[in-house]
Each structure stands twice: as structure tokens, then as C-alpha cells.
Image (cartoon, rainbow, N blue to C red):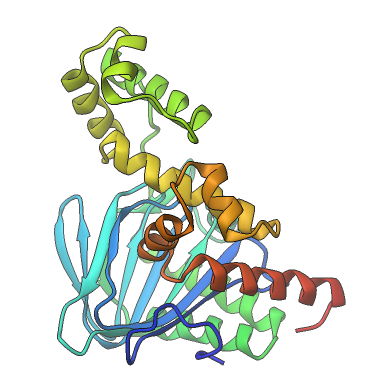
Length: 291
């Protein structure tokens, strides 16, 4: 099953990115990467990664972390990060991408955390939690939604109780933060034909350097990198609705499909065509009501 959706043609690499209709709010990625690297990006939801073989190097705002078998990488929403192989033979891993709403519901039901739940630590040595993540994958492979949902909640509750905390609220109180938010809104609204940095700064009554600095301080990424990330997110929505990759590329502002392919694969981990096929299979499965 793992070789059905191939992330790249490079020898020895494979990946599958999918959902299970019985576990809403959860994306899954299982892969083996050798030369593949993830460019700096963010996620709207959480990331829980369990390395099975090899080493994954993850670049976080606080520095580089090395994920080895038995560890779990935990990344909060909207935190910029990148990743690549930490050893020549690469790494194999199982990753869960639960939505923020799914995590909030588990936190309310199964922990004493209040407010916005998240994680203070980025990586922990927790072989049992790592095993649970792999078992969620196995349950979805077997079409066992009851087991997958149950194991997911057990794993998340364990990590929240051991490593969780209430995250501080984001409050754009400063002028720079407000300018950055306005800039983000403009880029999102005009994604297919965005202004240059100079044009954007003039529209907002700022200077290019001041805007660049404020945007990176607010979102951890410069505007052009944030825009690429946002385009890939929107492309995912279009692909999930059945849009062809070439049409999705134009709709979100990429020059052509090869540009979408390159950026999409370096952020999501699989090409847009493979992503669309898995989503079509998931939705067809959901309509049938069987795995």
C-alpha cells in the first residue's frame, strides 16, 4: 500500500499522504525520504511525527532538532519549520496532522488545559507515544476507523497531559503587527496577482524594509515565502474539490504546473497529482461508507 502513491521518482523514496473518512480533521503522511527536503513552511493545524528508521533534522525557530526512532516531534500551528535527512540513508516516519479544532476538543474532553492548548516542547523521547502514532496509521490502513480514532485520542491526550500547555493568545497590539496583518490580508486576497514589496509597502504607508521586518516578526516568514505557503494551502483545497493540478496552479498564482509541483512537493511531501488521487479515493470511500 505504501508504494501506491509515490512522492518522488528518486530511487528508494516513497510517500503517501491521505485521510480516512471515519476520522475527520486528520491528515496522515507516511514516507521514506533520502534526498527530499521540506522547505520552510507552516501548518494550520498540529504536526506529530514519529521517526521509524534513520534520522530527520528539523529546523525550528529555536534551532535544529534531531528526530530519532522513539522520539516524537510536536509542532504547534503556524510555526515555521523545515526538514531534511540527518544521515545519508535518510529517514522513514509516520506523521499525523490533526486540525486545531480536533486537538482543542480532545484537550477539553481529556485534560485540564484551558484556553488554546499546545506544546512547550518541540521534541520528546516517548517511545510509547511514537508507537501509538504508528498504530493510528496501521488502523487506517486496515480500514478500522474506531481503532484509528480511539488510538489518536489516546496518543494526543498522553502528549497533552505530559507536554501540553495553554498557549498565549496572539494579539497584534503593535503598529508593526497590525501592518503585517494588513499585508497578509492583501496577499491572500490578491494571491494570483500580488503586488511587489514596494507596492505593498506604499499601499500600507510603510517602507519595504519596515514591512519586511514586521511581517517576519509576526509570521516567522518573509512575505514571498508566506505567499508560496498560502498558495500551496489553497491549491490543496482546490485539489480536494477535484480541480486538475494545472488549473489549480493558475488559480493560486503559480506560473505553470511545474512550479506548483515543485513547491507543493517541498511543502506537502507528495506531488499534487498523487495528493488529488488520494483525496478522490478517500471521498469515494466515504460515499460508500466502507474502507
